[in-house]
Image 1 (cartoon, helix red, strand yellow):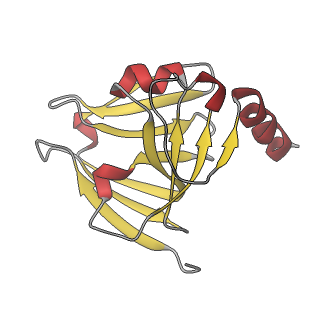
Image 2: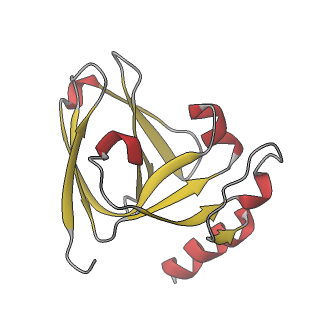
Image 3: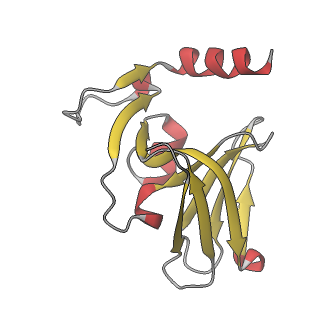
Length: 142
């Protein structure tokens, strides 16, 4: 897919609606401890998000989960809305939030070195360790 697409979704209670612009229909998995704690398993998210518009911002709670990133959720129902770098250059939006039956491509896994041994995805993916993820973002800053 070469043209950006806009996807919409809302939290469980409907207080927050997102419009997400994505350049590709790719899904990535994050296996870091924080994502697994946040959602009970790996975060499966759209990784090519260029813009997120939020309606119902008064219902959004943003939690600074690290020095470099924050996570947002609906303060009423707890639905996970997005993970973003504090610089604003990268958003990851849970795939289930905007999924309308698209032909997604599951093509990447990050923090593969933190993935517990009790689950496994069968897809062939690009796999990065936590160190490799941080190095990739450092290269983008230079």
